[in-house]
Length: 114
Length: 115
Image 1 (cartoon, each protein chain N blue to C red):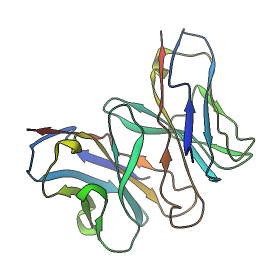
Image 2 (cartoon, rainbow over the protein chains, first blue to last red):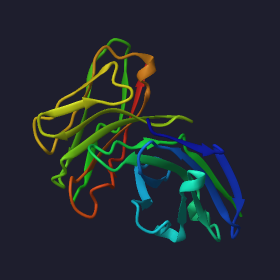
Image 3 (cartoon, rainbow over the protein chains, first blue to last red):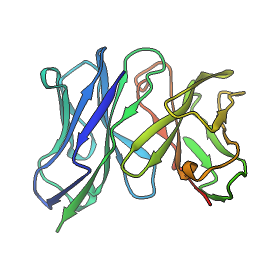
Image 4 (tube, each protein chain N blue to C red):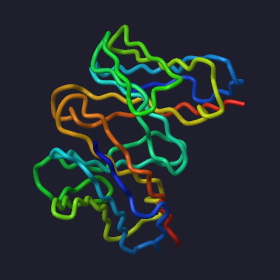
């Protein structure tokens, strides 16, 4: 069975500071990994994905994530936070075959302080 | 291109009532999914479908039913609503092949309250 753990349900950073959202996964097969963002009262939008190509993945809005198999991690980073980054972020894992059902972490709410 | 459309956006039900959440996509996606989102719990998969006429249970199917008579539509039925079904429900879809084959497109959600 696959699972995802996001460390920290709430992260607060100052505008211009580094954003680091942590995600660890468990999977018995090579995983696909995703970060989704949810703005208030909206559905989820894809930020970036890892599907066994380059281990450093760049996404939208300046975010990137690095797949580290030895650490079973897929942490999300952004060098300089912007007020518009305030949202909830979800890490998710799926297998590469079949229905590719996504298993989500519990989410991390990012707050940006002016 | 509307993407994934969910109706209604909000609904209040009394305990024991039934209702159907509608989901339609116009992208000709084979795969469709229903998730529920509860605070601090992330999203849990209720049911999914890999094509018209084929559905299967996800992680939390109890109290729900689905059907998939067409590629476009994937309604979620709640029978005998209970307070534990108070949640935000998201429908999602993805294609089976192509560059976007592993990326879900989500609807805007349906917020359901059972009193």
